[in-house]
Image (cartoon, rainbow, N blue to C red; front, side):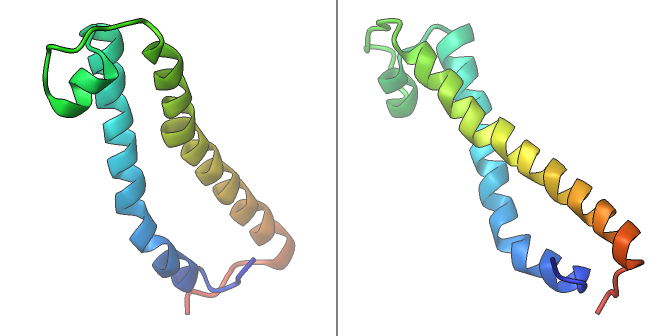
Length: 95
């Protein structure tokens, strides 16, 4: 674990927009498939002519776990580790 918090945050900045985009996409996909009853192909191609066969619900749940739940768990663990590290080593330097 680095003692320089600012450098660690700067190194993670390019990943944050991708994670936000993936979370928004996962939520829109979930709404389209579960609430609106669209098929996956119909949602991705913005076309309502595709038939919904019911197997997409499993993949939507899996997509939510990968794109929403796992990044939240990773962020929570990183914050917990940083707080625990500060108790052991004292306050971290900003530069």
